[in-house]
Image (tube, rainbow, N blue to C red):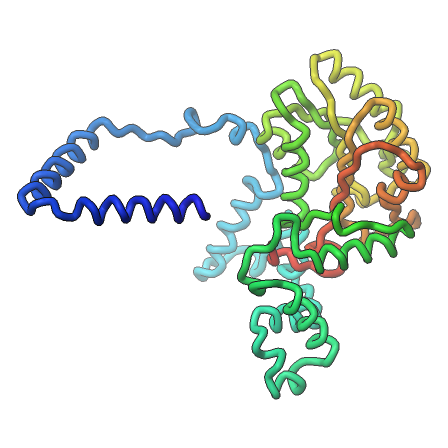
Length: 346
Protein backbone atom coordinates (compact mmCIF):
# COMPACT_ATOMS: atom_id res chain seq x y z
CA UNK A 1 0.00 0.00 0.00
CA UNK A 2 2.85 2.40 0.76
CA UNK A 3 4.25 1.71 -2.69
CA UNK A 4 0.90 2.46 -4.32
CA UNK A 5 0.52 5.67 -2.32
CA UNK A 6 3.98 6.85 -3.32
CA UNK A 7 3.17 6.10 -6.92
CA UNK A 8 -0.04 8.15 -6.73
CA UNK A 9 1.74 11.12 -5.14
CA UNK A 10 4.44 11.06 -7.81
CA UNK A 11 1.86 11.08 -10.60
CA UNK A 12 -0.02 13.97 -8.99
CA UNK A 13 3.17 16.02 -8.74
CA UNK A 14 3.91 15.42 -12.41
CA UNK A 15 0.37 16.38 -13.43
CA UNK A 16 0.47 19.63 -11.45
CA UNK A 17 3.85 20.66 -12.80
CA UNK A 18 2.66 20.11 -16.35
CA UNK A 19 -0.67 21.88 -15.98
CA UNK A 20 0.58 25.03 -17.75
CA UNK A 21 0.12 23.43 -21.16
CA UNK A 22 -1.78 25.59 -23.63
CA UNK A 23 -5.37 24.90 -24.68
CA UNK A 24 -4.23 24.25 -28.24
CA UNK A 25 -1.67 21.68 -27.10
CA UNK A 26 -4.30 19.96 -24.95
CA UNK A 27 -6.73 19.72 -27.87
CA UNK A 28 -3.99 18.35 -30.09
CA UNK A 29 -3.13 15.67 -27.56
CA UNK A 30 -6.80 14.66 -27.24
CA UNK A 31 -7.24 14.40 -31.00
CA UNK A 32 -4.13 12.23 -31.20
CA UNK A 33 -5.32 10.00 -28.36
CA UNK A 34 -8.73 9.37 -29.96
CA UNK A 35 -7.10 8.65 -33.33
CA UNK A 36 -4.71 6.11 -31.77
CA UNK A 37 -7.66 4.53 -29.91
CA UNK A 38 -9.57 3.95 -33.16
CA UNK A 39 -6.48 2.51 -34.80
CA UNK A 40 -5.78 0.05 -31.98
CA UNK A 41 -9.39 -1.16 -31.80
CA UNK A 42 -8.87 -3.09 -35.02
CA UNK A 43 -5.68 -4.71 -33.70
CA UNK A 44 -7.07 -5.73 -30.30
CA UNK A 45 -7.36 -9.50 -29.77
CA UNK A 46 -9.06 -11.45 -27.01
CA UNK A 47 -6.36 -12.39 -24.51
CA UNK A 48 -8.29 -14.74 -22.21
CA UNK A 49 -9.49 -17.90 -23.93
CA UNK A 50 -9.26 -21.59 -23.09
CA UNK A 51 -6.18 -21.69 -25.27
CA UNK A 52 -4.40 -18.70 -23.75
CA UNK A 53 -5.09 -18.81 -19.99
CA UNK A 54 -2.77 -20.56 -17.57
CA UNK A 55 -3.10 -24.28 -18.47
CA UNK A 56 -2.72 -25.20 -14.80
CA UNK A 57 -6.17 -23.68 -14.22
CA UNK A 58 -7.66 -25.92 -16.92
CA UNK A 59 -6.02 -28.97 -15.38
CA UNK A 60 -7.56 -28.27 -11.96
CA UNK A 61 -10.73 -30.31 -11.33
CA UNK A 62 -12.94 -29.31 -8.39
CA UNK A 63 -15.99 -31.53 -8.71
CA UNK A 64 -17.74 -30.36 -5.54
CA UNK A 65 -18.35 -27.05 -7.31
CA UNK A 66 -18.62 -28.51 -10.80
CA UNK A 67 -21.25 -29.40 -13.38
CA UNK A 68 -23.72 -31.03 -10.97
CA UNK A 69 -23.78 -27.94 -8.75
CA UNK A 70 -24.21 -25.62 -11.73
CA UNK A 71 -27.18 -27.70 -12.87
CA UNK A 72 -28.70 -27.55 -9.39
CA UNK A 73 -28.33 -23.76 -9.43
CA UNK A 74 -30.26 -23.64 -12.70
CA UNK A 75 -33.08 -25.59 -11.05
CA UNK A 76 -32.92 -23.22 -8.08
CA UNK A 77 -33.38 -20.18 -10.32
CA UNK A 78 -36.20 -21.91 -12.18
CA UNK A 79 -38.05 -22.55 -8.91
CA UNK A 80 -37.58 -18.92 -7.87
CA UNK A 81 -39.10 -17.82 -11.19
CA UNK A 82 -42.17 -19.98 -10.62
CA UNK A 83 -41.36 -23.00 -12.80
CA UNK A 84 -43.04 -26.29 -11.90
CA UNK A 85 -40.57 -29.09 -11.18
CA UNK A 86 -40.98 -32.51 -9.51
CA UNK A 87 -39.59 -30.90 -6.32
CA UNK A 88 -40.06 -27.56 -4.60
CA UNK A 89 -36.76 -27.16 -2.72
CA UNK A 90 -33.09 -27.98 -3.29
CA UNK A 91 -30.58 -28.81 -0.57
CA UNK A 92 -26.96 -28.30 -1.63
CA UNK A 93 -24.90 -31.08 -0.05
CA UNK A 94 -21.84 -30.77 -2.29
CA UNK A 95 -19.82 -29.05 0.45
CA UNK A 96 -19.90 -28.90 4.24
CA UNK A 97 -22.17 -25.88 4.72
CA UNK A 98 -24.23 -26.42 7.89
CA UNK A 99 -26.04 -23.08 8.05
CA UNK A 100 -27.36 -23.45 4.51
CA UNK A 101 -28.86 -26.74 5.67
CA UNK A 102 -30.72 -24.87 8.44
CA UNK A 103 -28.31 -25.45 11.32
CA UNK A 104 -28.80 -22.37 13.48
CA UNK A 105 -25.73 -20.27 14.37
CA UNK A 106 -24.53 -20.44 17.96
CA UNK A 107 -25.96 -17.33 19.61
CA UNK A 108 -22.96 -16.59 21.83
CA UNK A 109 -20.58 -16.36 18.87
CA UNK A 110 -22.86 -13.99 17.01
CA UNK A 111 -23.32 -11.82 20.11
CA UNK A 112 -19.57 -11.43 20.59
CA UNK A 113 -19.00 -10.77 16.89
CA UNK A 114 -21.73 -8.14 16.72
CA UNK A 115 -20.21 -6.26 19.66
CA UNK A 116 -16.79 -6.40 18.04
CA UNK A 117 -18.23 -4.99 14.82
CA UNK A 118 -19.91 -2.19 16.78
CA UNK A 119 -17.64 -1.58 19.82
CA UNK A 120 -19.62 1.45 21.00
CA UNK A 121 -22.48 -0.89 21.84
CA UNK A 122 -20.41 -2.74 24.43
CA UNK A 123 -20.46 0.34 26.70
CA UNK A 124 -23.98 1.43 25.85
CA UNK A 125 -26.45 1.44 28.79
CA UNK A 126 -28.78 -0.84 26.82
CA UNK A 127 -26.08 -3.46 26.21
CA UNK A 128 -26.77 -5.28 29.48
CA UNK A 129 -30.43 -5.60 28.50
CA UNK A 130 -29.59 -7.11 25.10
CA UNK A 131 -26.41 -9.13 25.70
CA UNK A 132 -25.42 -11.53 28.50
CA UNK A 133 -22.55 -10.41 30.71
CA UNK A 134 -20.12 -13.11 29.48
CA UNK A 135 -20.58 -12.04 25.83
CA UNK A 136 -19.88 -8.41 26.72
CA UNK A 137 -16.80 -9.38 28.72
CA UNK A 138 -15.47 -11.57 25.91
CA UNK A 139 -16.05 -8.91 23.28
CA UNK A 140 -14.30 -6.24 25.35
CA UNK A 141 -11.26 -8.48 25.78
CA UNK A 142 -10.96 -8.75 21.99
CA UNK A 143 -11.71 -5.07 21.35
CA UNK A 144 -8.87 -4.14 23.69
CA UNK A 145 -6.40 -6.47 21.95
CA UNK A 146 -7.36 -5.83 18.31
CA UNK A 147 -6.01 -2.42 17.21
CA UNK A 148 -8.30 -0.82 14.66
CA UNK A 149 -11.08 -3.31 15.26
CA UNK A 150 -12.50 -5.89 12.87
CA UNK A 151 -12.16 -3.57 9.87
CA UNK A 152 -8.38 -3.29 10.09
CA UNK A 153 -5.67 -5.57 8.78
CA UNK A 154 -4.23 -7.85 11.43
CA UNK A 155 -0.65 -9.04 11.62
CA UNK A 156 0.13 -11.55 8.88
CA UNK A 157 0.10 -14.56 11.19
CA UNK A 158 -3.30 -13.62 12.61
CA UNK A 159 -4.56 -11.80 15.69
CA UNK A 160 -2.29 -12.72 18.60
CA UNK A 161 -5.11 -13.12 21.12
CA UNK A 162 -6.98 -15.49 18.82
CA UNK A 163 -3.83 -17.54 18.28
CA UNK A 164 -3.38 -17.71 22.05
CA UNK A 165 -6.90 -19.12 22.41
CA UNK A 166 -6.25 -21.63 19.62
CA UNK A 167 -3.03 -22.72 21.33
CA UNK A 168 -4.95 -23.18 24.59
CA UNK A 169 -7.49 -25.40 22.79
CA UNK A 170 -4.76 -27.53 21.18
CA UNK A 171 -2.91 -27.87 24.50
CA UNK A 172 -6.04 -29.21 26.19
CA UNK A 173 -6.85 -31.50 23.27
CA UNK A 174 -3.41 -33.12 23.03
CA UNK A 175 -2.16 -32.83 26.58
CA UNK A 176 0.95 -31.19 25.14
CA UNK A 177 1.59 -27.45 25.35
CA UNK A 178 1.14 -25.51 22.09
CA UNK A 179 2.65 -22.13 21.24
CA UNK A 180 0.77 -19.27 19.53
CA UNK A 181 3.95 -18.67 17.51
CA UNK A 182 3.42 -22.00 15.74
CA UNK A 183 -0.13 -21.13 14.68
CA UNK A 184 -1.18 -19.31 11.52
CA UNK A 185 -4.75 -18.09 11.01
CA UNK A 186 -5.85 -18.38 7.38
CA UNK A 187 -8.86 -17.57 5.25
CA UNK A 188 -10.34 -21.02 5.84
CA UNK A 189 -8.49 -24.33 6.13
CA UNK A 190 -8.48 -24.61 2.32
CA UNK A 191 -6.28 -21.53 2.11
CA UNK A 192 -3.91 -23.09 4.65
CA UNK A 193 -3.71 -26.23 2.51
CA UNK A 194 -3.05 -24.12 -0.59
CA UNK A 195 -0.22 -22.16 1.07
CA UNK A 196 1.40 -25.33 2.43
CA UNK A 197 1.17 -27.12 -0.91
CA UNK A 198 2.65 -24.12 -2.68
CA UNK A 199 5.61 -24.26 -0.31
CA UNK A 200 6.24 -27.91 -1.19
CA UNK A 201 5.87 -27.82 -4.98
CA UNK A 202 8.74 -26.09 -6.74
CA UNK A 203 8.35 -27.47 -10.26
CA UNK A 204 6.43 -30.00 -12.37
CA UNK A 205 8.48 -32.92 -11.01
CA UNK A 206 7.49 -32.38 -7.37
CA UNK A 207 4.56 -34.38 -6.03
CA UNK A 208 2.34 -34.84 -2.98
CA UNK A 209 0.68 -38.12 -2.00
CA UNK A 210 -3.09 -37.85 -1.58
CA UNK A 211 -5.69 -40.41 -0.43
CA UNK A 212 -8.18 -42.17 -2.70
CA UNK A 213 -11.00 -41.36 -2.15
CA UNK A 214 -10.19 -37.74 -1.31
CA UNK A 215 -11.70 -34.29 -1.02
CA UNK A 216 -10.88 -32.72 -4.42
CA UNK A 217 -9.23 -29.68 -2.86
CA UNK A 218 -5.96 -31.61 -2.88
CA UNK A 219 -5.82 -32.71 -6.50
CA UNK A 220 -7.02 -29.27 -7.65
CA UNK A 221 -4.49 -27.39 -5.54
CA UNK A 222 -1.62 -29.58 -6.69
CA UNK A 223 -2.64 -28.95 -10.31
CA UNK A 224 -2.74 -25.19 -9.75
CA UNK A 225 0.74 -25.35 -8.22
CA UNK A 226 1.98 -27.27 -11.25
CA UNK A 227 2.92 -30.43 -9.37
CA UNK A 228 1.94 -34.09 -9.46
CA UNK A 229 -0.74 -35.80 -7.39
CA UNK A 230 0.37 -39.25 -6.24
CA UNK A 231 -2.67 -41.27 -5.21
CA UNK A 232 -2.68 -43.96 -2.53
CA UNK A 233 -5.68 -46.14 -1.71
CA UNK A 234 -7.26 -46.36 1.72
CA UNK A 235 -8.02 -49.86 3.00
CA UNK A 236 -11.82 -50.15 2.89
CA UNK A 237 -11.82 -53.65 4.41
CA UNK A 238 -10.05 -52.30 7.50
CA UNK A 239 -12.25 -49.29 8.10
CA UNK A 240 -10.63 -47.03 5.48
CA UNK A 241 -7.35 -47.16 7.38
CA UNK A 242 -3.95 -46.30 5.92
CA UNK A 243 -1.89 -49.27 4.78
CA UNK A 244 1.86 -48.62 4.95
CA UNK A 245 2.54 -51.24 2.27
CA UNK A 246 0.19 -49.34 -0.06
CA UNK A 247 1.98 -46.09 0.78
CA UNK A 248 5.35 -47.65 -0.03
CA UNK A 249 4.06 -49.07 -3.33
CA UNK A 250 2.57 -45.73 -4.44
CA UNK A 251 5.76 -43.91 -3.44
CA UNK A 252 8.04 -46.33 -5.30
CA UNK A 253 5.92 -46.18 -8.46
CA UNK A 254 5.92 -42.38 -8.40
CA UNK A 255 9.68 -42.19 -7.94
CA UNK A 256 10.16 -44.66 -10.77
CA UNK A 257 8.24 -42.23 -13.00
CA UNK A 258 10.57 -39.39 -12.03
CA UNK A 259 8.38 -37.75 -9.39
CA UNK A 260 10.11 -36.11 -6.46
CA UNK A 261 7.56 -36.89 -3.73
CA UNK A 262 7.83 -34.29 -0.98
CA UNK A 263 4.73 -34.66 1.16
CA UNK A 264 1.91 -36.91 2.34
CA UNK A 265 -1.63 -35.53 2.69
CA UNK A 266 -3.91 -37.25 5.22
CA UNK A 267 -7.58 -36.57 5.96
CA UNK A 268 -8.45 -37.61 9.50
CA UNK A 269 -11.35 -37.94 10.20
CA UNK A 270 -11.81 -39.02 6.62
CA UNK A 271 -13.58 -37.01 3.95
CA UNK A 272 -15.66 -38.48 2.39
CA UNK A 273 -15.12 -41.78 4.26
CA UNK A 274 -15.70 -40.52 7.83
CA UNK A 275 -13.27 -42.83 9.65
CA UNK A 276 -10.85 -41.95 12.45
CA UNK A 277 -7.35 -43.39 12.29
CA UNK A 278 -6.16 -45.29 15.35
CA UNK A 279 -3.18 -43.98 17.28
CA UNK A 280 -1.25 -47.09 16.22
CA UNK A 281 -2.02 -46.45 12.55
CA UNK A 282 -0.87 -42.84 12.92
CA UNK A 283 2.41 -43.98 14.51
CA UNK A 284 3.06 -46.30 11.56
CA UNK A 285 2.42 -43.44 9.13
CA UNK A 286 4.72 -41.11 11.04
CA UNK A 287 7.52 -43.72 10.96
CA UNK A 288 6.98 -44.12 7.22
CA UNK A 289 7.32 -40.35 6.70
CA UNK A 290 10.45 -40.27 8.85
CA UNK A 291 12.06 -43.02 6.76
CA UNK A 292 11.07 -41.44 3.44
CA UNK A 293 11.69 -37.81 4.48
CA UNK A 294 8.13 -36.67 3.74
CA UNK A 295 6.29 -33.65 5.14
CA UNK A 296 2.89 -34.50 6.67
CA UNK A 297 -0.18 -32.43 5.80
CA UNK A 298 -2.87 -33.53 8.27
CA UNK A 299 -6.37 -32.32 7.43
CA UNK A 300 -8.25 -32.63 10.74
CA UNK A 301 -11.16 -30.22 10.18
CA UNK A 302 -13.83 -32.83 11.05
CA UNK A 303 -12.32 -33.80 14.40
CA UNK A 304 -15.54 -32.83 16.22
CA UNK A 305 -17.58 -35.10 13.93
CA UNK A 306 -16.81 -38.65 15.09
CA UNK A 307 -19.38 -41.32 14.20
CA UNK A 308 -17.62 -44.60 14.97
CA UNK A 309 -16.10 -46.15 18.08
CA UNK A 310 -12.54 -45.04 17.33
CA UNK A 311 -11.84 -41.65 18.98
CA UNK A 312 -10.07 -38.86 17.15
CA UNK A 313 -6.31 -38.62 17.73
CA UNK A 314 -4.36 -35.73 16.28
CA UNK A 315 -1.15 -36.22 14.33
CA UNK A 316 0.43 -33.50 16.47
CA UNK A 317 -0.19 -35.51 19.64
CA UNK A 318 1.40 -38.66 18.19
CA UNK A 319 4.33 -36.82 16.59
CA UNK A 320 5.06 -35.08 19.89
CA UNK A 321 4.79 -38.25 21.97
CA UNK A 322 7.12 -40.06 19.56
CA UNK A 323 9.54 -37.13 19.72
CA UNK A 324 9.66 -37.37 15.98
CA UNK A 325 11.47 -34.79 13.89
CA UNK A 326 9.03 -35.18 11.00
CA UNK A 327 7.71 -31.87 9.63
CA UNK A 328 3.97 -31.44 10.17
CA UNK A 329 1.25 -29.09 8.98
CA UNK A 330 -2.08 -29.73 10.71
CA UNK A 331 -5.32 -27.99 9.75
CA UNK A 332 -8.49 -27.23 11.69
CA UNK A 333 -11.42 -24.94 10.96
CA UNK A 334 -14.29 -23.12 12.68
CA UNK A 335 -16.43 -23.68 9.59
CA UNK A 336 -16.77 -27.41 10.33
CA UNK A 337 -17.65 -29.41 13.42
CA UNK A 338 -20.21 -27.85 15.75
CA UNK A 339 -19.69 -24.21 14.70
CA UNK A 340 -20.49 -24.11 10.99
CA UNK A 341 -19.44 -20.49 10.36
CA UNK A 342 -18.41 -21.21 6.77
CA UNK A 343 -19.10 -17.70 5.48
CA UNK A 344 -16.99 -15.93 8.12
CA UNK A 345 -13.51 -15.29 6.70
CA UNK A 346 -10.29 -13.61 7.69
